[in-house]
Image (tube, rainbow, N blue to C red; front, side, top):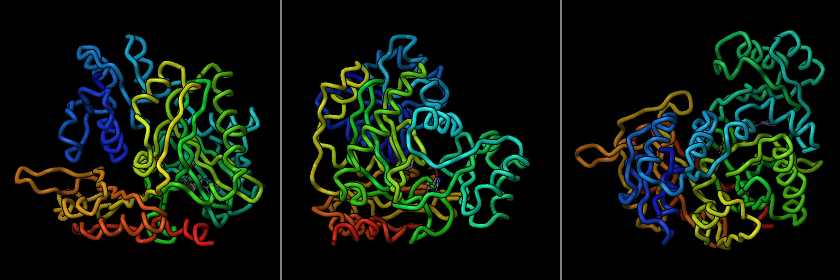
Length: 428
Ligand code: AMP
Ligand code: GLY
């Protein structure tokens, strides 16, 4: 079959890597892809937001299956357009992708259908937003309503932080359009976990658990990023055998039922970002796609053929699917460029990728470019996702960092504590 992957980051590199292992795939295309992806993946020079052009291209090339990585084309209705011309595509429609695209929509849905989440209010008027903050007290969380690349969330420890965040979003240009409506939430405490699940509109099939590391610096310090590393499984989740069945029935299945009820059946990957609080798991956010960087360790652990599962999602026969996972743990350490997350640096020469791969790790590329002389250089905020398996999280951490330590580039930012939070569960 001819398969097309849409996207260019580390998540898409992992998708390409996994899909190429399927005997069903004859030709794999990627639009636009990146220089670090497998040479067998044929690059298509179209950007992820060129929805009309991508549809025409896929039709002209008789693509059998398209897998969408990032949220932007979903929010632009790429799936609707592909379906309208009879192309098979893996991902939610524009209406279903609102689950990620509008925090107000997501919160209203959870509230209406009894899905556990933090108490909240949603506002466009600064005065009303501020009154709610006074009522809620601090700490509280102020969020831009729309898509903000994971960065539109401000945790406020003082009232003045919260009032400033409200003014910046509602009156200023922080986060642009995405910030002109805000969601204000109760602050939740606990361990965060990402549960990604395949969904065909009716059936939910969860993948193995993972944990992201959103802050730029060790010990969760500094501003939020797209994600500085991830590991799977998340022992905070697996240690208590009652958590997975609760999350499956009370969160994932309820969400899929609610979306069908609202006339927006959800197909693709439903990503529930959860906080495991003392009063049970609560949804922090939904994403309507594979997580980045969670996809890198999660797909490294997947034994089954990803094409088989995706075909069952697209055909609506996920109830007949089973997915096999490796018992091994996986850890992905992100190497970011100078200035990230506020800015990024490009053109810094990267050395050691080959050596890192010789250790047995897989180096997924996000923001890299191959220069004409063959040298790898940085070309974005998150540069590489160095991912390794191990018999335990501790082993996978050691294997991932052994590979990371082979790679250098000027200004590289690497958290040294990816996976550490898991060890308190593993070692007890
Ligand atoms: P979100 O994009 O909504 O997932 O928020 C980004 C990050 O902010 C999350 O991964 C959490 O670390 C943090 N966060 C969001 N909402 C809350 C909340 N209600 N309580 C505590 N932390 C939160
Ligand atoms: N890792 C968080 C996300 O993909 O949004």
